[in-house]
Amino acid sequence: MTLQQLEYVMAVYRFKHFARAAEYCKVTQPTLSSMIQKLEEELGVKIFERSSQPIRPTAVGQQIIAQGWRVIRRADKIRDIVAEEKSELCGTFTIGILPTIAPYLIPRFFPQLMNRNPSLDIRVVEMKTEEIKRALAEGSIDAGILAHYENMDKFNVDHLFFEQFFVYVSQQEPLFEKERIKTTDLTNGFLWLLDEGHCFREQLVKFCQMKAARRSKKAYSLGSIETFMRIVEGGKGITFIPELAVLQLSDYQRLFVRPFAIPVPVRDVVLLTTKDFIRHTWRKFIVGEIQQSVPQEMLELKKIYRQI
Image 1 (tube, rainbow, N blue to C red):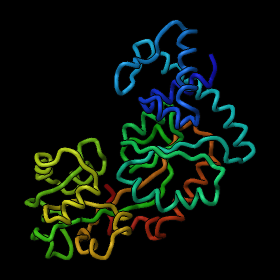
Image 2 (cartoon, rainbow, N blue to C red):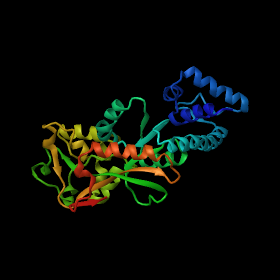
Image 3 (tube, rainbow, N blue to C red):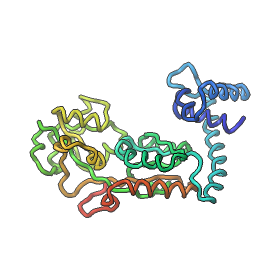
Image 4 (tube, rainbow, N blue to C red):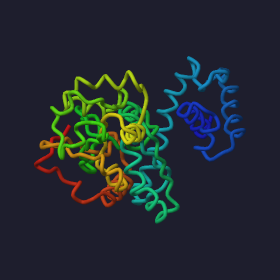
C-alpha cells in the first residue's frame, strides 16, 4: 500500500468518476485504475462499486476511505511543515468556493495570479457551505471561500470583503419604476430564488422576511443566479444578485438593477481554514491576492449595511 494509491482512491471518491479523478491527479485513467485495482487485490476487498453511476464506495470501501483521509492528512502535514519553514508556495493548494461567489470573484484574480505565477498548482472547486465544511474536516480541500455564518468557532476565519446585495427587476414588474427597494416591497412580486441549501437564498429570505419565497419553486425548481437573470431580462419576475456580479454587467443589464433601501443587506465573504492549518504562507498569499482584486471600498463594513 502506498500514499499514491490512497490519493488515487480519494480522488475517485471525490469526483465519483475515474476519468475526472485521473485528470485531477494528472495521470492517465488506465494508470489510476490499475493502481487502485492493485490496492484492492492487496487488501482482498473491492473499494468501489464500478457498476454504479456515479461511482460509489462499497461499505468496507467507505471505512477504508475514512481512514485513508487521516493517513494522507498526516503525511501532508510533514510536507507542509517543511514548506512553511521555508516560506514556500509549493505543492497543491485546493480551494472550495460557493457557486454564488465563484463566477464573479474567480475571474477577477485567478487568471492574473496564474499568469504571474505559472508554477503554482492552485485548484478551485465549487461547493455549497456544508460541503466546504465537510471537505475541510476531511482534508480534501485546504481552504474555503464562503459567506460568514454563525458558529464558525471550529475554524480559522480570515475576512476577505463585504458584498452588498442588489435587486434585479423585470420591466414588467411595478418595482421597476422604483429607485430603491424596501423589503416590504417584495411581498407580492414573483421571486426567483436558489434552491434550499444555498446560504445566498437563506440569507435573503431571512433578511427580507419573504413569504413569497416559495412561489418560484413551482415554476423552476433548479437554477443559478445567471439563469434567473436571463428570465428577468426576458420579462418575468425579480431576483437578487451580489455586488461583484453588478460590476460585470453591460449598460443594458444595469437597467434592471435596483439597490436596497437602507439598511442594505451585505454578506461577509471569508476564507475558512481548519484550526490545525499550518500553510500560513499560502493563506496570506491568497487573502492578499483576493483583497487586491476587489474594489477597495468593499473591504470595510459601512454604516448603511446590515450584515446577514
